[in-house]
Image 1: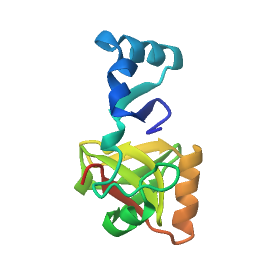
Image 2: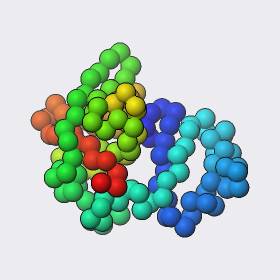
Image 3: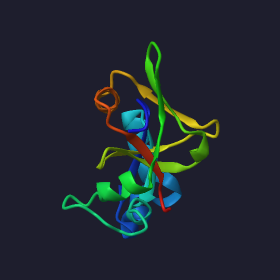
Length: 141
Protein backbone atom coordinates (compact mmCIF):
# COMPACT_ATOMS: atom_id res chain seq x y z
CA UNK A 1 0.00 0.00 0.00
CA UNK A 2 1.36 3.37 -0.97
CA UNK A 3 -1.37 5.22 0.92
CA UNK A 4 -4.87 4.61 2.25
CA UNK A 5 -6.24 4.75 -1.29
CA UNK A 6 -3.37 3.60 -3.53
CA UNK A 7 -1.64 0.23 -3.95
CA UNK A 8 0.90 -1.35 -6.27
CA UNK A 9 0.47 -5.05 -7.00
CA UNK A 10 3.33 -7.07 -8.49
CA UNK A 11 2.33 -10.29 -10.24
CA UNK A 12 3.93 -12.81 -12.61
CA UNK A 13 4.75 -11.13 -15.91
CA UNK A 14 2.60 -13.55 -17.91
CA UNK A 15 -0.45 -12.80 -15.74
CA UNK A 16 -0.38 -8.98 -16.09
CA UNK A 17 -2.63 -8.79 -19.19
CA UNK A 18 -5.26 -11.07 -17.63
CA UNK A 19 -5.22 -9.14 -14.36
CA UNK A 20 -5.72 -5.83 -16.15
CA UNK A 21 -8.29 -7.24 -18.59
CA UNK A 22 -9.39 -5.89 -21.94
CA UNK A 23 -9.46 -2.10 -21.74
CA UNK A 24 -8.63 -2.30 -18.02
CA UNK A 25 -12.00 -3.91 -17.25
CA UNK A 26 -10.77 -6.39 -14.60
CA UNK A 27 -8.67 -3.95 -12.59
CA UNK A 28 -11.39 -1.27 -12.87
CA UNK A 29 -13.88 -3.68 -11.29
CA UNK A 30 -11.55 -4.27 -8.35
CA UNK A 31 -10.84 -0.55 -7.97
CA UNK A 32 -14.58 0.23 -7.92
CA UNK A 33 -15.32 -2.43 -5.30
CA UNK A 34 -12.42 -1.55 -3.00
CA UNK A 35 -12.21 2.21 -3.63
CA UNK A 36 -8.45 1.77 -3.80
CA UNK A 37 -6.39 2.72 -6.84
CA UNK A 38 -4.32 -0.22 -8.05
CA UNK A 39 -1.21 -0.20 -10.24
CA UNK A 40 -0.47 -3.66 -11.60
CA UNK A 41 3.21 -4.19 -12.36
CA UNK A 42 5.15 -7.22 -13.63
CA UNK A 43 7.09 -9.06 -10.95
CA UNK A 44 10.25 -8.70 -13.05
CA UNK A 45 10.23 -4.97 -12.23
CA UNK A 46 10.10 -5.78 -8.52
CA UNK A 47 13.34 -7.73 -8.25
CA UNK A 48 16.70 -5.98 -7.89
CA UNK A 49 19.13 -6.13 -10.82
CA UNK A 50 21.17 -8.91 -9.24
CA UNK A 51 17.93 -10.92 -8.74
CA UNK A 52 18.87 -11.95 -5.21
CA UNK A 53 15.71 -13.08 -3.47
CA UNK A 54 14.96 -14.48 -0.06
CA UNK A 55 13.01 -17.68 0.62
CA UNK A 56 9.70 -15.79 0.48
CA UNK A 57 10.46 -14.48 -3.02
CA UNK A 58 11.10 -10.92 -1.89
CA UNK A 59 14.26 -9.08 -2.89
CA UNK A 60 17.25 -9.76 -0.67
CA UNK A 61 17.64 -7.21 2.12
CA UNK A 62 21.38 -7.17 1.57
CA UNK A 63 20.97 -5.49 -1.79
CA UNK A 64 18.85 -2.72 -0.30
CA UNK A 65 21.21 -1.95 2.54
CA UNK A 66 24.23 -1.83 0.27
CA UNK A 67 22.68 0.16 -2.62
CA UNK A 68 19.93 2.24 -0.98
CA UNK A 69 20.04 5.78 0.35
CA UNK A 70 18.86 7.01 3.71
CA UNK A 71 15.77 9.19 3.71
CA UNK A 72 14.15 12.04 5.61
CA UNK A 73 11.06 11.13 7.67
CA UNK A 74 8.60 13.78 8.88
CA UNK A 75 5.40 13.28 10.84
CA UNK A 76 2.53 15.76 10.82
CA UNK A 77 -0.98 15.47 12.31
CA UNK A 78 -2.15 12.70 9.99
CA UNK A 79 0.72 11.54 7.80
CA UNK A 80 4.21 10.16 7.71
CA UNK A 81 6.03 11.98 4.93
CA UNK A 82 9.08 10.39 3.35
CA UNK A 83 11.28 12.84 1.43
CA UNK A 84 13.77 11.71 -1.17
CA UNK A 85 14.22 14.37 -3.87
CA UNK A 86 16.88 12.33 -5.70
CA UNK A 87 14.19 9.69 -6.41
CA UNK A 88 11.52 12.10 -7.76
CA UNK A 89 9.10 10.31 -10.07
CA UNK A 90 10.63 6.87 -9.48
CA UNK A 91 9.29 3.61 -8.11
CA UNK A 92 11.42 2.62 -5.13
CA UNK A 93 11.77 -0.33 -2.78
CA UNK A 94 11.87 0.72 0.87
CA UNK A 95 13.94 -1.23 3.37
CA UNK A 96 14.64 -1.03 7.08
CA UNK A 97 18.16 -2.22 7.77
CA UNK A 98 18.46 -5.36 5.64
CA UNK A 99 14.72 -6.10 5.52
CA UNK A 100 12.46 -5.24 2.57
CA UNK A 101 9.38 -3.32 3.76
CA UNK A 102 7.35 -2.20 0.72
CA UNK A 103 7.42 -0.54 -2.70
CA UNK A 104 6.35 3.08 -3.23
CA UNK A 105 6.12 5.68 -5.97
CA UNK A 106 7.92 8.92 -5.16
CA UNK A 107 6.03 12.00 -6.40
CA UNK A 108 7.54 14.48 -8.83
CA UNK A 109 8.07 16.77 -5.83
CA UNK A 110 10.29 14.11 -4.22
CA UNK A 111 8.14 12.58 -1.49
CA UNK A 112 5.48 10.02 -0.68
CA UNK A 113 2.99 10.02 2.17
CA UNK A 114 1.12 7.46 4.20
CA UNK A 115 -1.26 7.56 7.12
CA UNK A 116 0.84 7.74 10.28
CA UNK A 117 -1.51 5.24 11.92
CA UNK A 118 -0.91 2.55 9.28
CA UNK A 119 1.05 -0.51 10.33
CA UNK A 120 3.91 0.11 7.91
CA UNK A 121 4.24 3.76 9.01
CA UNK A 122 4.36 2.68 12.66
CA UNK A 123 6.99 0.06 11.80
CA UNK A 124 9.10 2.64 9.95
CA UNK A 125 8.87 5.09 12.86
CA UNK A 126 9.85 2.38 15.35
CA UNK A 127 12.83 1.35 13.25
CA UNK A 128 13.89 4.99 12.85
CA UNK A 129 13.67 5.63 16.62
CA UNK A 130 15.78 2.52 17.25
CA UNK A 131 18.49 3.94 14.97
CA UNK A 132 17.90 1.54 12.09
CA UNK A 133 18.48 3.08 8.67
CA UNK A 134 15.48 3.38 6.35
CA UNK A 135 16.66 3.25 2.72
CA UNK A 136 15.18 3.60 -0.75
CA UNK A 137 16.42 1.79 -3.83
CA UNK A 138 15.00 2.62 -7.26
CA UNK A 139 13.35 -0.44 -8.82
CA UNK A 140 15.31 -1.81 -11.74
CA UNK A 141 18.58 -0.09 -10.77
